[in-house]
Image (tube, rainbow, N blue to C red):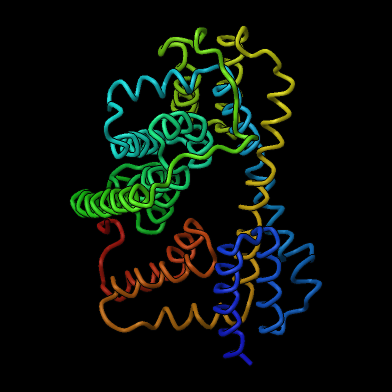
Length: 377
């Protein structure tokens, strides 16, 4: 039955990908896919889905407990920035610099802003909530298909500043240092080369996707719930418009050792927005309600994928796959890379994959190549 469990793991992964691409909400697709894992791995259904120890619900609840405040405050800040006209001011300033002739330059500017924020230590979730209202007027002005928005954002937050650029403060760069005994800036040459590869590939793909979209005459479309009206005559100047974001980054840098610093930083940024833009924020109660409501769906959707990964990691099929990965022949570097990539795909979490690889694969790799841990990059 162990082979059936392995088949069930891959079947569940294919199922959740297929269902979500067919517009089935991930909050429905994730528990259904988890049931596939439980049934094919002969796991007790009720305990696997609803148990109080390790289960689908504990995985979902654990992520929500740790991150919902970030989702909520980030969404509220985005509403404040959008309703005050601050994002419109920043967008207009970006357009003056990059011009309106090249939509590609706008996508490039968004990717650059995302990279700078995450390299500065700002959470991926916060950056996304920040760039959403900032990017809408840019896409609307240049008539760019809104479905392209994830490309520059994730190029900025999920590639070189997440994993390869020397000194990046991401958890993906920090976790291996505890096992290897290295610093965040270890192996700088290799890091720079890999970062260059990521940038070249990302920019090329972004250019290709934009050209393909323009060839199909795809333009910007706006949903009613996304429209936030602002008085262009009373837009704040660029300095004031930038202060909430600057206060967020400054708070994170200055008080980086403070517990729950992202929550503190977002709260500070919201208060700064309130003080600076109060005359433009006609109904703050509505903004608070809308921001909080808008955060629920993405928070639960993300938590659902984490919960699915929790069930996968509990299955006997996953344990067998993990054992097979550890026995991949060839260069230890190749097997280590493949191991981390496969684990990440199976559990649906890059940080979880790094943690598993660091604790389970790195010690054996170091022993096999006989390299002192303090010298490893």
